[in-house]
Length: 460
Image (tube, rainbow, N blue to C red):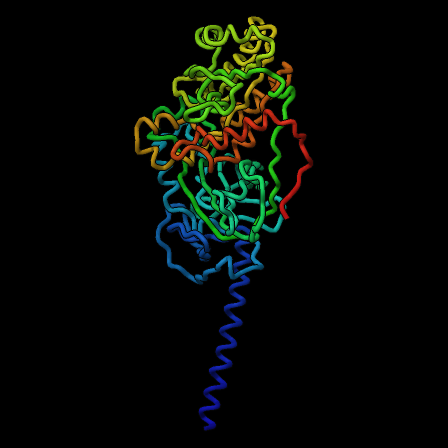
């Protein structure tokens, strides 16, 4: 009996010592993950949890290493954790696929000469806004910006496709601020649980998304990262989206004419009918806006299709251009879009000269959501060519440039860009450029509304 009690005592003591060791190691790895010093073994992507491995001998080649001191941390079971690694370990394919797309060349135009592809992120949820640090394929923290992500939060009790989307600020040091905003199409919020799934789409890395024509012409595709990862998290602080207001309001006109590409069509027209009886669009101009196409296509078609209507001062005109300017492979604009932005100024001058009694509105660019088209798009030659230069960074650049010009010219600017950015879940399936009619109808309703902007409010 004594011998049995002694054995039991030693077993109990051993169990206590092992438990203390596990807790100590657990704290050690959480501390490493929070500091961004953790190196993770390359491997497959695992949503909803993260696997932490200490690999002091990890290298860029991704050669197999012996796994030591491995421990799994489940976010749901670690409520005190304030950092999340996504994906669980650095992607083993992201850098390989981008290098394959770009090819092997060593001149200054290769974006990977001094930059490693982002293959993982470390999310800090203990500060407002949340901070997301980019990590390369070895799990090392990057110190340069230029990555493009799309981050969606969906509450566990959410009936829509998303609860909020992060408006992302590149801090140019390898870190990114995440300001979560409710999706514009959702107007009421109730029965939210305060936790849900966070999905991050890795779109581009190392400034590849901002690369202009013709630098990607010889690449196998657009060089996108094509990585998606999800984890279950506590809800971030979420700002309620505020619809834009304009002056004068569309309701002050007897009729509104929309002229331009398919995005200007969709502002007023669904699949089969107009959203209102007092709006009109005739046909697609099918052209990028340059100093050459302005007088060859835009002004002649505007005159031919709407010249009669625009003699009436109670008819308003909506114009703009961005999608064709970004996507046309032969549209050599360089990074600054200098010719296009000059053409925007000339466009306004031409319209005001020809139709002096017409009130002109300029519609902001829309956001291009490349993750809504990939990776399947790259397998189709025609689709791959169409998205070769497609990115949110290029559309945002045009948005800021056009907004500044219209402010200088005192032209009413339909500032719809934030709404477009937050509404990737409501683009047409497999498209990334065009939006669903239910969202386009919502935007048009804003332009007829007299609602004033209220101070920023947050979901409780």
